[in-house]
Image 1 (cartoon, one colour):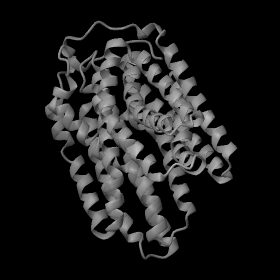
Image 2 (image 1 turned 180 degrees about the horizontal axis):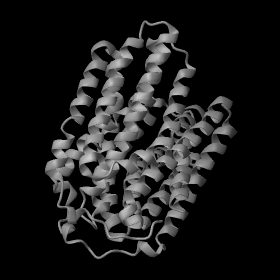
Image 3 (image 1 turned 30 degrees about the vertical axis):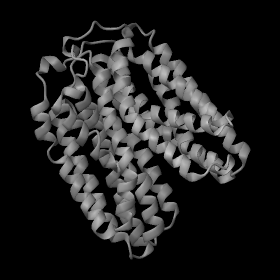
Image 4 (image 1 turned 90 degrees about the vertical axis):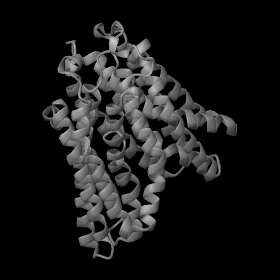
Length: 399
């Protein structure tokens, strides 16, 4: 039920993400600038939404809070499709977008609450399944884009809303799982802003939960523009790179997460993820001005490096975000950790756009920055790590 619920939600996310903005601009004839402004507002709103959702998850139960947010998001997606007033469309778009990082954050708390000591293993499996479902949704969205008709757009956006609603229903049923009964409040969570007052965890969030996630925007935003504008590689290479990423993460995420146990191994995995992302950034400039075959091989190698970085960073993030949090506070800590990516999403398009405008120094400076961000993670984690008895989970049945 856990895998199915979040798999359906990720399928809807993969389907709706590329279609919603295009539907508003091409079908509803909304100017691009207001749509971009709405997405920007949603990005900043999600920074605050993640910690708030995490605190609510600790208080009311992660499954209940996650189901409520999925339900509101499904309603917002339906309003984008059926609402014809501009205020309603813009509000719905902002609401649906701002809930994404918060739902992803609370998902971590749901897994921690249901899986107990097996949470890292289940989080790795869930990540692999979710990535494949997201890729399937994105592939189906491509069919609507290729067709280009209004009925195709509306039909697939309706499927997107239904998938989100189905995920909401299944997540709500998880609240009835025998292991989902609310735990007594943890003494570690007596402070109202516990995670936000934990400097070690905030440093891990900024590095492993923020900067090191640049691999994603590099692959889905910067690489397609780089291939189209600066290389002789064929356009289909972009789709091939994304397919390699989807299949690679689906196949490797669970085994990698199973092998990376404990905060020290997690920290080393984060360091390696930063090094791999830096290597990909340093490799990409050499594809400019090269023959088509050589450029294709370079871009393909960069995609493999970024996929490997994603697998290691995800495993590190799962381990560190769970093991550095006191028991009973996973909603709070997962919410703050999720805010790292929400903050990165607000600045990464402008940052990568600047790099593409000045590629020769830009790619190398980005490589140095990402590598430098990953390097201190083992030291930060060594200082932030809690005593082993504060990180030990109570065993619960697996979901």
